[in-house]
Image 1 (spheres, rainbow, N blue to C red):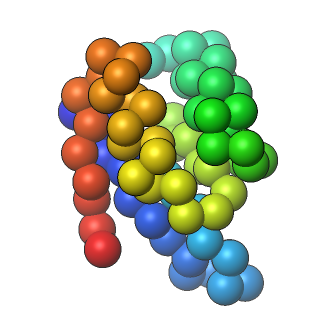
Image 2: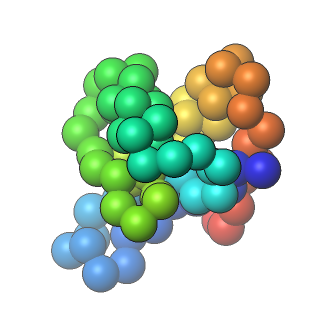
Amino acid sequence: IARVARESKGRGGKTVTLVRGLALDDAALVQLGKQLKAACGSGGTVKDGVIEVQGDHADKVLEWLRKQGHAAKRAGG
């Protein structure tokens, strides 16, 4: 189950949306990250199996992941 969280600690006050727990290999994560960034209209990266999307897009990311058939849950605040 993918966990979608929002975080701003240690990022100079900037908010990012994190997606953890997807059972995909690195190449698939990078591809999924690219699609998520396009869907949210923002930048981001994939680090250590975690997709980071710049900005507070948790609701949009959750909805998008569910439409793609991934089990996803909100984590944190």
